Image (tube, rainbow, N blue to C red; front, top):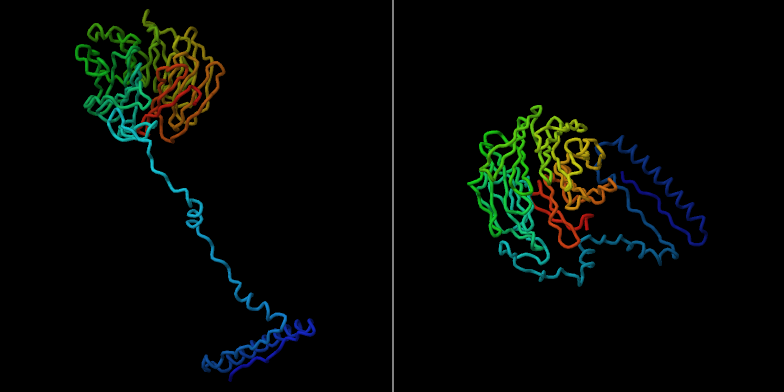
Length: 420
């Protein structure tokens, strides 16, 4: 049995009748649906084709016929894709060829003008652990066997020398004297090597040695400003001093409480030695009397960096406590706390005038601190990787700059003390 709905028409004369017809249509649909359901229950074997309702015939009134075609054709527009929008934006703005190129004076590779050479700066395949600065050069040490030397006399900081096979297992500390004629490096194998510079080229100086320092597990080292004395702190906490001009003879041996020595520094005048240790202890020794005038407290976690100010008035210390502490070297009193790093502070460096203190942290941030105001005046956070070492560069004119290195495996150079 086929079902057929009742035909109906719209009247264009009286508007309410349209709504009445609509209501009648709804009631008809309801009855048809009920009949269809009842029939389907009583005759389940009826073919599905017989149960299809007949098509509805609609008589469109005159006032709707004019807009009916436009209603049917009013389909949604296709959405403009992001690529098409980008093409429209870039119309007539295509990328231009890079023409400002020149040749790197260090490696001879093609590079962009006024930009550091990527072949020279990113030449370490592993983390860079230490930097040492002279008047015209900067030395870098990493987990590879070679030491790299960059020139600071040129704005491009080109690589001028690679000291291959300096340390077979890599190097973790390298230091230089004030005039840039002598350098000392310590490898992961425990060996200490002394280097001499002649006409800008470095070579190993085998006449001067640190005695049997290689067998004493020296970790951190510091070199006096005149290059004569070398100080090192060992893994058992001993602080030893050698006279390099006397063939590397050991002249001092300071004993501490036996905690791992992580860092060491010599004052500019050579009168004081400071060391930081794994148990948080900080010691200051007098090189004249051989005594320890102060045993500083304030850092209960490992100390990773100690640095004397250029005039020797302050000692800065920092480490796993995330805080930089300033001590008065004349009294041993703690005079300031500089907080702002969110991770271990790994390196400290004073500016040449002593106005600013530079710090590098495990969180990848480099901060410049004003000693007068005891506040941070600049923060650099171009990387999230650890910054193992920071160093101020020789002052050029009125502006100062510094270099940073670490887990990014590259050396970054900055100008101006406040981050300019």
